[in-house]
Image (cartoon, rainbow, N blue to C red):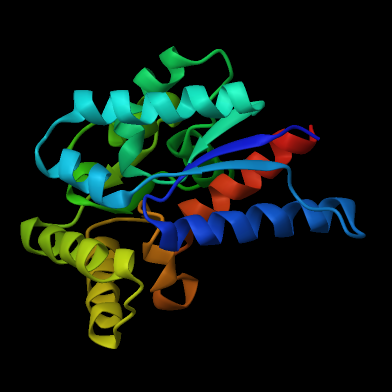
Length: 230
């Protein structure tokens, strides 16, 4: 079994789900008392959020690259960034180490294409929805088109993620807000929904959508388990 190096803490709420899903995935595959071999580097999310808000993506790249090198030295065979937004600095992380990075957009896009779907409604932080690093990767590697919510809905999603979900607060009005946004994306032509922030699945899931929902946390963990056991 390969050792999974996880850069987590972005936020710890979703990293806890990564740890659970990785171990459950290995246990299902191998049975008995098996669990995943994981080395976890959990960052202080406050430092990451500060760099994001300042638009200091070079600083964020240097910050995560340091953790990636530590995981490689500690014995990780490949890396997972337990977040979607911070894949903006994935190229710098990959350049800092000799072990591969399992990119969340790659495995999510592949899952959508396997399902025969072609136009995804993308939910995430403002950075993920408004910048091109994520959507272009889906388009270039998987020929997957994306639709993002309008400005008002993007603001609502971003605020719920940072002010509630990253702090472990799950509120029914926020769940209803997400349901409305999903309905509007489907009306705009989305044939599926990508939960492109690892915290969103704490609040909504398949039961909240009439079209297929792809939880990037679950998809990413499943792909990591497959790679670890390959």
